[in-house]
Image (cartoon, rainbow, N blue to C red; front, side):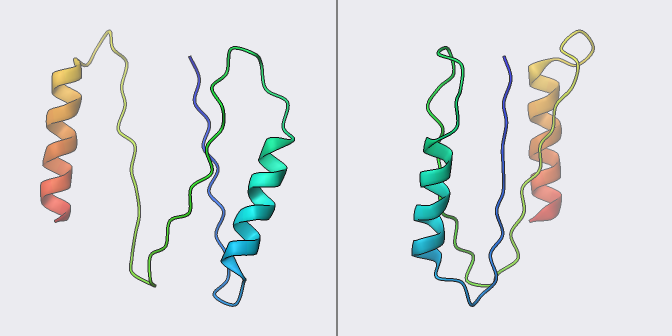
Length: 80
């Protein structure tokens, strides 16, 4: 299984509604394998607030799911 993510950042003076529609139109033209899920385009508005995401992953042969979830909660608590 594979996952792909694309983040598009826009300048403040861009018409976000038009840009979002343009992006959706372009994504609809992408040829994906028949087994792939339909792509999703989502607008995230931050109102100029700091926003970020992080991804925590590890080799399942070495790290258990419970361990990774515990580490993620710990990181979240420290950031808050």
